[in-house]
Image 1 (spheres, rainbow, N blue to C red):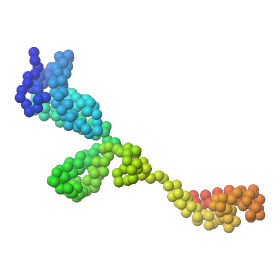
Image 2: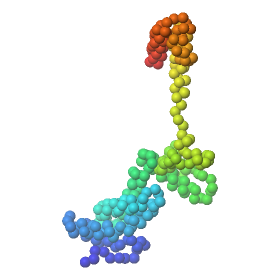
Image 3: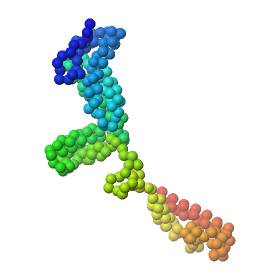
Length: 263
């Protein structure tokens, strides 16, 4: 005995399964119920695939989208209650669509973005689309977007930043407006260790000034002129061992005073 019949409907993939769902709702768990459930999923699968087709070309493989839509359809079949008086399609379409959007939200962002930021992004995107549809060549300003989307200007800025977080550029991608062959990696800055050197030098200056003149001279000749301990000893008329001892003592004194000042 057939479980469904076809009726005229604005969508060719929408079968008339009202009687089948009413029967499914009253069947106990078992092979008969499983078979009817599987048949309903099969009959409504074209509709789920049609919904998945709306998201083709948005960075996800279409076969994966079909599987996500099919999962949403199964959830819709299991969760639908015909006693509420609504058509299955009115329940299934938002369920399948929500499953696909959830897939994009959880798996397709290049950067992890909080859900609130994702929602701001969507509202800003819709506002940009609607405001741009007025025919003006000018990009809508932050204040206009905020007024249209009923958001604060700060939220609009967050949403605009999130618009660029859905996908990521390769570091090997050429950058527009630069010389040919210039990649994004070539424009990234590097840590300049010279800044650390400047900070260190400024930090030890007060401590160095407290040393006796001879110790300051020895440190200068050793670390700024690059002279060996034997050359310094010969220039100052002392032993190399004495120069070594003075360097160690002076460095320890400077270190203690710098740490004491920083505490």
